[in-house]
Amino acid sequence: MDRPRVVLGVAGGIAAYKAVELLRQLTESGHDVRVVPTESALTFVGAPTWAALSGQPVSTSVWDDVASVPHVKIGQGADLVVVAPATADLMAKAAHGLADDLLTNTLLTARCPVVLAPAMHTEMWEHPATRANVATLRARGVVVLEPAVGRLTGADSGKGRLPDPAEIALLCRRLLARGAQPPDLVGRRVVVSAGGTREHLDPVRFLGNRSSGKQGYALARSAAARGAEVVLVTTSALPDPAGVEVVRVTSALDLRDAVLKAATEAEAVVMAAAVADYRPAQRLAAKRKKTATLTVELVQNPDVLAELVAARRPGQVLVGFAAETGDADGTVLEHGRAKLARKGCDLLVVNEVGEDGHPTGFEGDANAATVLAADGASTDIPLGSKDALADTVWDLVVTRLTPR
Ligand code: CTP
Image (tube, rainbow, N blue to C red):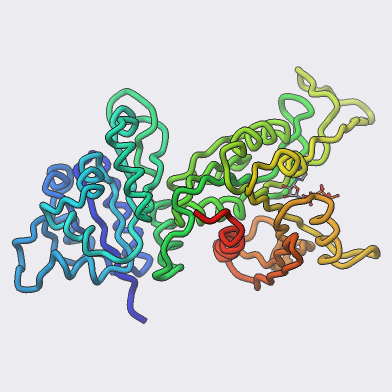
């Protein structure tokens, strides 16, 4: 099989040094990468670095190797174009169709999915000119990732960091896995919850569950790759997916507040979190001392999904997850159908859980499920990666979103 052909555009920002790691991640996972830097990117990282690590020639200009017509050929031949970092200047040029170097020409000739990973100071990202350019690019189907929040070039912090290169590489892989299909969640705002909640007994101890958060992170990554603006409300400490706004929470009550707040602006909410049904009636301020026996009174937590259903915006698609085991009262799917009706959501992703060693058990990278829909439809997702399951869930959500 041909290796997927990726064009890595690098614009002139300090985060160009992180694009070296992105290049390594892409080549080591079997992609054929052609690096197209801008002239100013080379003031941060020189052409020999890009050429040596990609194994391909590097040029910033349309006037090198003219006989091969590189300004057309590179874009036309690409399966994916990713620009990291994308500067305010590069996005302004792309939004207006300027083509004064090899990278901007390549952006005009590419017909494959295009991902821009902006990195700049917060002021530049928030400037109305940049906002307008980002909106224009997104309206054309370009996946413009939200920058990460954190330390910027100087001593200051804020929104504007390039996301983790390893996560940008994972996002690129998700897009490539979808082939030539255009990103179909561009301009849609979605919320995903992930991980198991922790219900504290005292400052040291909590009641928890075994959810790793991996399925929720796969859902967030898949949505971001398809162009969505994603809020991930999570209890997990996994690395932040590229382009995703991450809200960290601990307990079911924290998760509820964060999900309900984010849901007011969302077109879809996927509740992949394992929300504890109960919490200790009291959270002690000081560590509990040992006693001969211990009885803990538990009180019920709110049902977040039920509250989302009650507060649903017109057209909002709500997705629940249900880890079930069959029992004397019914099979896994019978319990799933009953839960779907009880919860009132649009889709319920039902998966069978078993003892350790079960292929779809907790903490693993594989999953299988049946997605039950309120309209009676049912979709089997065979055993595969959590990423593949996430893609199918979004396929089902997309068909239920209000058309634009
Ligand atoms: N959920 C929720 N709030 C809760 C419990 C669960 O929002 N307090 C959500 C989960 O995120 C999941 C769905 O509801 O998407 C189903 O979770 P599950 O624990 O299977 O549902 P329960 O109503 O608690 O059913 P059961 O009686 O089987 O525990």
